[in-house]
Image (cartoon, rainbow, N blue to C red; front, top):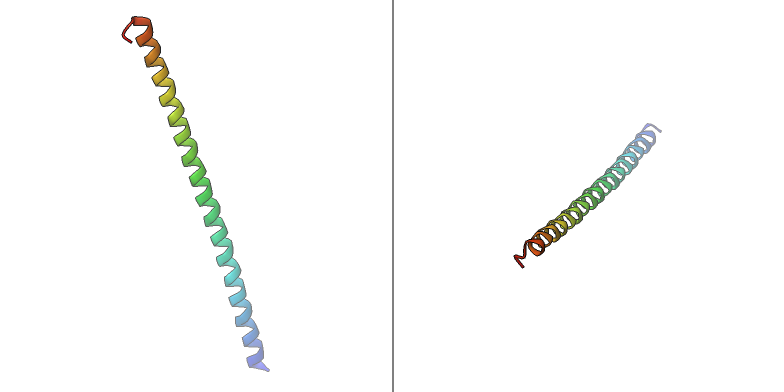
Length: 67
């Protein structure tokens, strides 16, 4: 009778550990996705800034006749 209970207990402990690991993996995936989307946002913002700077430089060149 005793060994039956200890087997059940260790089974439940393993089950709980598995659920905790799965939750940890899901959180890591979410964190990774958040980091990737933040990186993409930064890259897009950087490209927009570059385009604006280029446009401003071209406008200056055009207005001063350097083009």
